[in-house]
Amino acid sequence: MTKKLRPTLAIKGTLGLEADGRNFGGRERIALLLKIGELGSISAAARDVGMSYKGAWEAVDAMNTLAGEPLVHRAVGGRSGGSATLTVRAQRLIDVFQRMEAIHQRFLKHLSAVADNPLSDIDLVRRFTMKTSARNQIAGTVSTVQSGTVNDVVQIDIQGGQQLVATVTHESAQSLGLAPGRSAFVLIKASSVIIGLPDGLSRLSARNQLKGQVSYVKRGAVNAEVGIQLDGGSAIVSIITTASLDALALSEGMPVVAIIKASSLIVGTFDS
Image 1 (cartoon, rainbow, N blue to C red):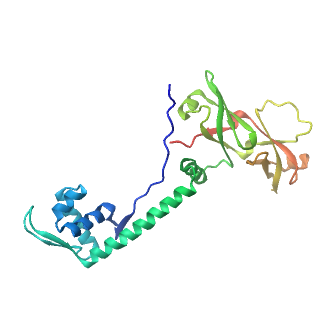
Image 2: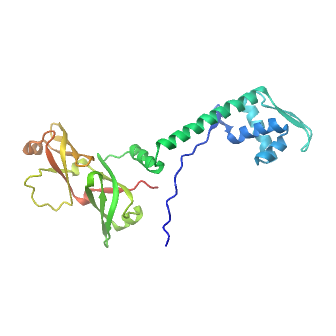
Image 3: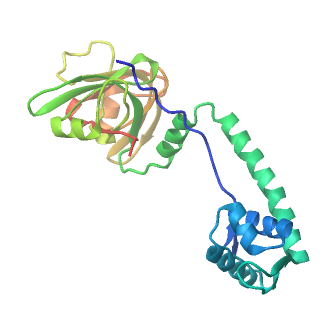
């Protein structure tokens, strides 16, 4: 069976004009004006650009109205007769639009060159714009899914070769399309992150024990916020009591382990 290749995503865009908040037109209407100037006939221009005769007349009327002055002078002579000429303003508009279109196409070409993989770059932008109350948002790739009757166990590879393990309902895993190779993200409340010391850790039932070091400490009256730079580049935030902060004697640069129960992870995907 031949594996279906993922289609290449290209960045495209169209240039349009507005007048007083109303759509003046874009490439199609400018093309119509250009053909009217070349052929001297609205009906002939409509046929050439693949537009209906009625649609062409309506487009010309709309452009004349929105421009605030005539763009096309018409000499009525019946459906097959008559003539049409462009005003100086229309000729200037065509020239300006063509210049703008050339600049626009160069911009799109440059944007495509910057985005070596447009699909992944768009996903990244979506991640930046995602809003959630969870302090910790970590992206990764699903590596394994162990299906169960009620719950599935999902392992997600993150930066630096570390893994996160989450338990989700089987129905949720199916709905999200979780499978090896699928891009996903994990949300973790800061209060769900327990901090431990790497030396002398007791055996724990928590599936997630991520190594890192303290990046900052913000002490409050009752609780403290502790930032942890995980091995490999990801970062995570924990909220603990000041009593725990003092008991562990946490300070910047100190090696620690972020401990999180698999049931405390919320898994999501970026695809619609």
